[in-house]
Image 1 (cartoon, protein in one colour):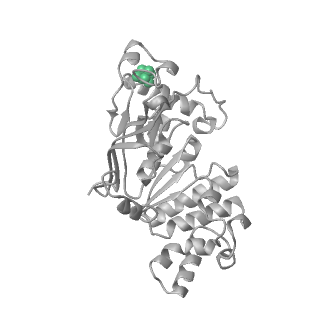
Image 2 (cartoon, rainbow, N blue to C red):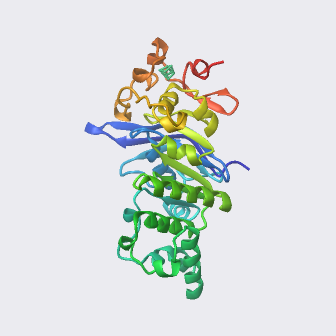
Image 3 (cartoon, protein in one colour):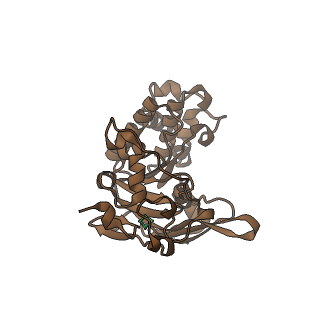
Length: 324
Ligand code: SF4
């Protein structure tokens, strides 16, 4: 059977000024295969977070969605709200940037981790056992003591781990992590990333890791999807895409992060300001910033094509970017 999650031509429109509609996600397609981590990369305004919110069935007020979000073959866009709620938090669990916003400040950690086991009417002792096990799995030290703490009593890293324990409580098959480490300092960041990678692997989960940070994605993702101005510009195996990009935007992103290229090279900042969906240039949205842009790029939106086995790019001149 197919991949657990297939995003097929997703379009999200939001209300814009003076009754207009703004297309913030414009025909996005990619798969999240079983037991695989896919990194979804883009700057702000790229549509990556909107794509994640659409998958969760939590798009902003006034959004209209079209295309298909196939979850084990079932289209979540066409599903009724109770079905979408049943999937969210259970089969698809989420980890956000800010655990303080995601956790309930007035409830002890143990109570929040135990919410799903309690809803499943497990006996009390069994719920406690499960809470300790989940906190332990998420790397919370002394889980029996920590389960009695309130979120504000924990450090940022521990709160993030508590949120991961909440996410695992429903035995999800997909973890959706939106900038899960952005608010943390660098050492805590890499520990949380290692934990997520370890959970993904040992539990055989699929993970969609949404981040603006190429370093974060390159550490854990096996596949990447690069978005720009609401569209996919490139997707493929992470190693290949980052070593040998097939799209000038990816190439510029890679050059802007020294640690991805070599440890010592200086980074070249990405020239120009990112296009926004409300102000998307005609043709290839990247053309005002692209060193390879020519007349065709201004007039024709490039389709996402397979330019090498398993490598997809939305550049008219992808072969030139890939090189011989
Ligand atoms: Fe650059 Fe043209 Fe390719 Fe767009 S289509 S990325 S402008 S070369």
